[in-house]
Image 1 (cartoon, rainbow, N blue to C red):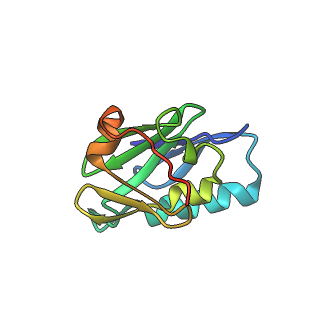
Image 2: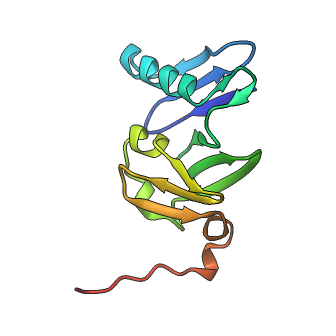
Amino acid sequence: MHVHVTPGDGEAKFWLEPEIELSKNYHYSRKQLKYLSRRITMNSHADGKSISAVEVTNVSSHGIWLLAHGKELFISYADFPWFKDQAIKSILNVVEESPGHFYWPDIDVDLTEQIIEHPERFPLKAKNI
């Protein structure tokens, strides 16, 4: 198993097994790699059990891949534009508040699995206050 991280001009690949290890790095600084490694460690397995029910497994130029309970979900920037210009730290900071309900506290965005899978059913609307 491995995870890709690809925001901005950088890209990194980390092996998750048998232990967390950097496989490839393109344009990330040592400081960024250290942060990414710590974040991956926090979301990896402890004693054979996942310590995080949800994790971001890839950030690309098109969107974000989210892994929740063994299911991959793709969050497209076209459908969810508020993620596009966020810092990787903010994107990786996701929690599952209840089954299938995900929250990014740094961005103040919450989405359900149903919204992610079928964004056409939930068009973006804005109100003038």
